[in-house]
Image (cartoon, rainbow, N blue to C red; front, side):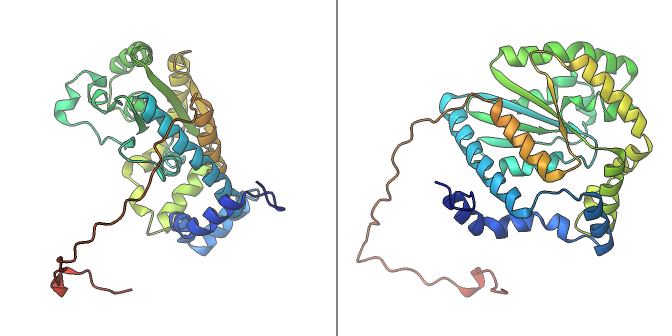
Length: 303
């Protein structure tokens, strides 16, 4: 049922109940210096209103819960890869996808740089243990495509290793698909100017400075090298069994909504049976006396 404003009353109530939680997440925008925030708003005049964004986000997240139930019930295996330039919005999209899901079913994999031991292994070996079992969704915040991007551009992999990767990855992904994994690959795309703006926002925001690494700063210097690497990556790894999908990311909120909507459209999920949940009566024992715990066990009530 929709009300006169075109909103579902249940979603309206849910929006009101969870607005604080979402605003907390959105504090990444609120902590900016006023000047940087003003410039950012001026360069994004068509941003979605907060109310429309949260309304759509909640609607899509309710569908993600249905997808989760379907994956769990049918023991489906789902892998979603998130790639893109530094600050392109991959992490923000992943956060909104997993925000209301069961972490035992939907988990995020963000591997650090390989150890000395891992550098001697078959390149894909350290990713294989993180692949899903039946009933799981795995979201890779960067993936084996590091070899086609940062490792290649920064010289961490030889050109022979890169070419071997390009020869191997199509068959590796075909193997994953043949094994029953549903594999979806996203590239978050932003412009040169947008990345520069986001890096400046991180520099001026104490809550975001941790996101800046020396590698991020090098990515600014090597913008064109990353562009060339990305173009060859698409050319060599965009296969019918596992195509790439590009998410325009200059508008963060639209990018998140569009990515979630597209991911849902890629999955043939449907309602699954649920056991009716009933709250059992509490067992009352008249002889039980609750112990008084020492006060120093309690967290101080500072708020």
